[in-house]
Length: 320
Image (cartoon, rainbow, N blue to C red; front, side, top):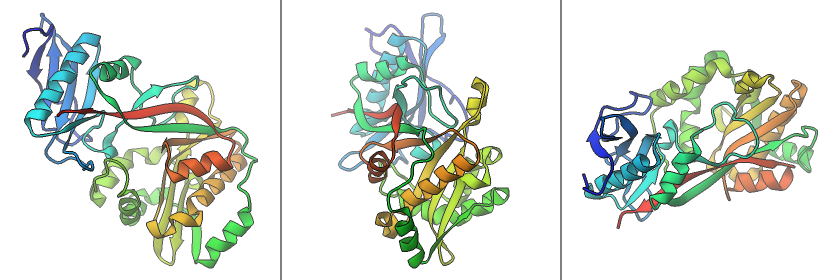
């Protein structure tokens, strides 16, 4: 502990057990009475790759005091640097499958289901501690569900000519569907920032809790022969019911096999989900957590009247 610090840094037990896996260390900033005012977990052994860097991760972050959080982040960076890390990245709870990103611009819309959330204070603490945005993301809403992609019939015919057919997942057999989709999801996301592969058992465990929230018509699988080549995961915004109604659906995950990325398959699945939402009486659709600049995000903004409703970021600080 540095003498100029107002809080004491102490190793502590983890905040929670899995689904966060097993961090390499847990630290807390305590005040003079021994009360925890901020805490976080660190990962440096089995972490995702970052080109040109040896990253260490900061996750499970909580802070109720601005100074305690700032001091804890400095300490966390010192710990990661001592383990040979060249960059500290956060918030990431071990990997991107278990939660990452801060809300950095919450806009006027209420939170929606399965969306990350955090006090604005935590973002200020990361920025004050010398962290810059490593990657940015956004969620966008479409309120006019009547709008359609241009030349949709031509796109449908082109996909059919390649032997691609769409079906809804059987959510009553959710585990079986996930196991069948596992190779596609690993392949489709392998180029994403901070990607690390997980096994089929882990994928099932992480996504099993959402099964009660699912409706078959919002989970789409594209197949070429017997092989899944596309997957769109959506659900009604059940969190909205707590605010007095539920008229919005959310599209959370879109995965397309690399050889089909430029066929328009992802856009086509999104259009079909939008049409289904309209048929089911929903008044809006949210395209959730798209990375800024990704091809799918650019095309969605280009071909649909979307309004960005929230922005998110992952932060990084050089440890050189």
